[in-house]
Amino acid sequence: MDTGDTGDTAWVLVSAALVLLMTPGLALFYGGMVRAKSVLNMMMMSFGALALISVLWVVYGYSEAFGDDVGGGLVGNPFELFGLSGLVGTRGAAHGFTATHLVMTVPALAFVAFQGVFAVIAVALISGAIADRARFGPWLLFSGVWATLVYFPVAHWVFAFDGAQSRHGGWIANRLMAVDFAGGTAVHVNAGAAGLALALVLGKRVGWRRDQMRPHNVPLVMIGAGLLWFGWFGFNAGSALSANGQAAEVWVTTMVATGAAALGWLLTERLRDGRATSLGAASGVVAGLVAITPSCSSVSPMGAVALGFVAGILCALAVGWKFRLGFDDSLDVVGVHLVGGLWGTLAVGLFATAGATAGVDGLFYGGGLGQLGRQAVGAVAVLVFSFVLTYVIGSAIERTVGFRLSEEDEVEGIDAVEHAESAYDFATAGGGSRSLAHPSVLSGHDRVQPEPRRVDA
Image (cartoon, rainbow, N blue to C red; front, side, top):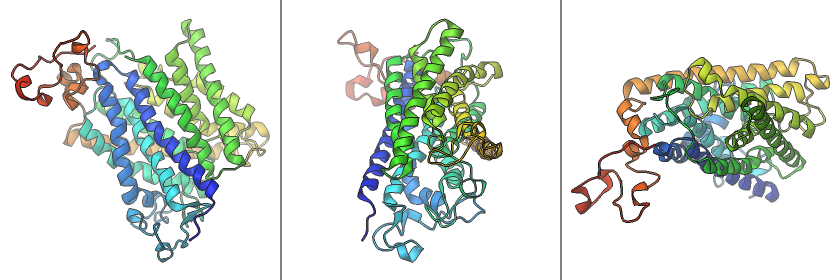
């Protein structure tokens, strides 16, 4: 049986592994940004998404995203490829696929793997908006429902092309024809809008605006940002689905836009605050990666520099909006992912050049307003759909099983309450002191005199 082009297959599988690494990188990035009493929960939200969405993707998520359209470009048939039936062995022809099970030049299961890790990190990104205050069990429930009702359909809208991944695909890709090469709308606008909705549902953290809520470990944040930058080459260049010139083009635009965004963020900090910070550098990196994601195949390298630099400035300014507007987006998912994703998507309509492999011209290259209008419609549609459904899902969970921690448990620390663990065993740092582990995880004589609970910094 033909297995497709081996070079392309190798590139897609390596890219899938790079994107998989981004979720642990996100766990480090987010984990370092919260207080010491919340770091394990913050990381567990990413790892929980990694475990749950991996399973749902294989069971019905891939079919819902890339099965044949059953809703006017809105959703794929979740039963057509249920459990990846028809993509393994020689059963593909019976389900309307060729016996070789190829997506372009790579085996279908390689494409399944690549798109599956996109689904994982889209869910994990939302967790940053509700840090410190969301119960872990309800978070997993939310993750599964949100992926099913929001992410999988939106992935169909944006990524399912007629005749390539699906016989009949999504409306944004095939009817609107907006350009979103690697998921600026499907991943970042989608997750950013969801983060905003969920932050409103759960409300503000105890002490927000009043207490210091500084990152407890900035080196951890920078390590996470570095892993995200590294993995993002799989995210963007891997979306070419081939080891070809387009992948090389996208690699370069991703690199320079990210660097320019970091510089734009640092310059904004320097002019506004009088100093440039390491947290700003890490945040600027992520802002640039987000912004270049939809446009990496449609802009020139110099266009990518301009796009990234503006993204760094816009996102640096946007993170302060939560204080003016009164919503507690803990780790700036809205300011970075929603704003960065919107800018990058709209920027296609400005900076795109037909000389790039996407082959479209934006306003600045004589293309008029047509492409800009298509980009705006796609971005706004995803934003509204994600915000409304997320608000409904989050509210339903909060009113039934309870999503948010009690005030007492939040003050005590979510790691101790939800996981009976502490990221840092300060009691034994001086040598010989008994662990401050929660009584439920102590055994034998250690349970006789359990340590009192304490409030971490």
